[in-house]
Length: 281
Ligand SMILES: [Zn+2]
Image (cartoon, rainbow, N blue to C red; front, side):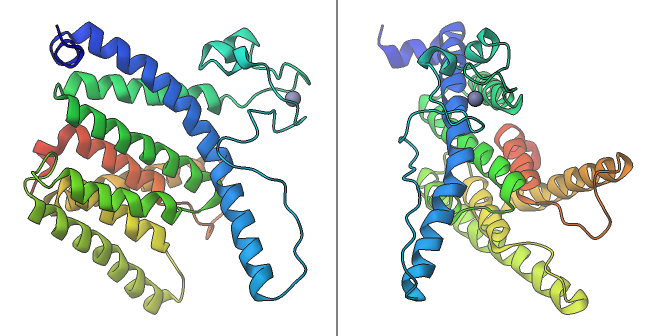
């Protein structure tokens, strides 16, 4: 039997592959979430120095693949086996191998979350192409969610390719009802939040959202069509309100302090992946 037929027809095989891929991708996403904002910040500083004709200060070379994993606290390289998703964390009992400082519980949680979502995609879809693209979409959404939580940024480097990819995968309507629905989804997704932003800004003088949010909703519209947008906005607003109220009750959010909106748009996007049929207007 061909591998792709095996993947599409034998459920346990499909789910095992997705479980392992999910853990590995989750581990890579941890690197992206930690390093991409630093890489971008270095790039912007460099550009600013060039424009202002300031002497170039050298920043440490950092890319997604270089240097190999290190502990952010003691900056020591970590042994390869502690890098094994989930099991590495358990093997060192959540402490750095060199300096014994606790490792953020978030790392194994992101690995587990990615694996759970990949496996759920494998249960929901059985077409290889749909699974491949749904997993790629989910990976980018996870990266954007945690980068936004950390830095209030939704980098163009992730949101823009997600828009183009959404239009391409729907050339024959893989996730949306048609290419037309996807194009309108991208445009209406962007413009709806853009309009809310300007109404809010003119009324209150404050900025309620960022341009990254418009691009993220444009991407979601491209992937699932304009029909999904109302429900995505409802779900994400609801999630955002529940989150803000919870933080207020726990005393962790002062009044007037902003919370990022990207993670909740991400939640709406993931919901579309599984409930697209129920989420159409
Ligand atoms: Zn350390």
